[in-house]
Length: 85
Image (cartoon, rainbow, N blue to C red; front, top):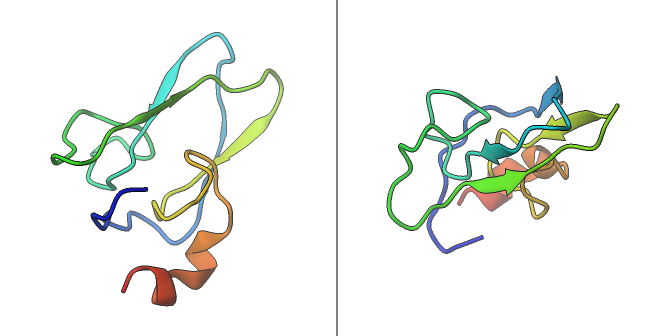
């Protein structure tokens, strides 16, 4: 993750069933109007993370934007009081 601070979209992940044949772009800045996906509105210094989900799995995508495993939730939302400072 870069030194810029992302905007926290939500304090919980998004649990989604996604099409394994499709490529997705996760928003890393928190400013997309299409959360948790990128809509191209990210400021300079942020880039979307592209990924393809595995077939048959629910993915838990990070909405706080502080995960160390983008685009997947790693529980960072439980420590936002320390991470977002």
